[in-house]
Image (cartoon, rainbow, N blue to C red):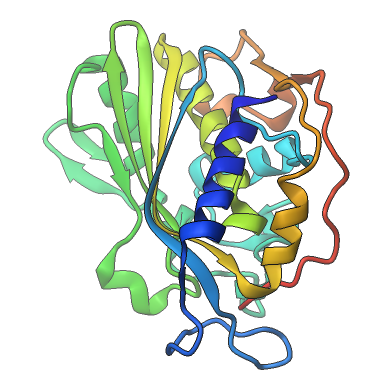
Length: 276
C-alpha cells in the first residue's frame, strides 16, 4: 500500500464518521440541476508526505500524474492565467471567452515585486533565496492577494507555499483553504510533490517532507457513496517517480522530464458530478 493511500483512506473515514454536515446552511456551490451542494467537512487536516521514501500517489485509483504536473508548470513555470496554455480542460468552467481565469494563480506568481536585491516575481524570489540564503525562514509564496480577488474567476484554493531547508533536504508546507476530497484529494499532493522535486534539484537539495495543511477538507453529499466504494478497494505499492538529472534550470523542466515507473492502480472513477 502506498503511504498516500493510508493517509487518504484515514482522512476519508474521519470525514465520513466525524465530519460536520453543512446541509441546510447557506452554501455557495450548486449542482448542475441547480440544487445546493452540501458537504461533510473536517477543519484543519494535516497530512505529511516524506518524498525521500516514496512518491505520494494513491493507488486506489490512478492519479494522472503527467496532467497534474502539466498544470503545476502552467501555474509556477509559465505563470499563466489562460487555459489555452494548458493541455487539459480542467479549468474551462472558470475561464472567460478569451480563456482567462482573471488575476488568479499563475498571474500572481508572475507579478514583479521590488526587493533590495532587485525586481523579481515570487517564483524567482524563491529560487534566488534557495541559492543565496537557503537557511532563511522567509522563503514563501502567496497568491491569495486581496486587492485582486474581485478580478479572479476563482479564488485560489492552494494558495501558499513555505519552503524550509533542514540539512541537505528541502521541505515545504502547502496551505490550502478548501479541498474537494474526491476530485482533488490526491491531485494537489502529486502536483506540489513534483514541484518540490523540481525546486530541490535546481537548488542542490534533496526533496524532504511535503506537509499539506487543509483548512476545509470536504466530501460533497453526492460523492459520499463513491468515496465509500473507493476506500474499500485493493491498494498497491507507490509508483517510482524520478527526474531527469540533467535539468539544472527550473524553467527548462517539461512533463517529459518526469520518469514514472511501476504505477499500478485501481480503475478510474468516471462521471463524477462537479459542484460549481
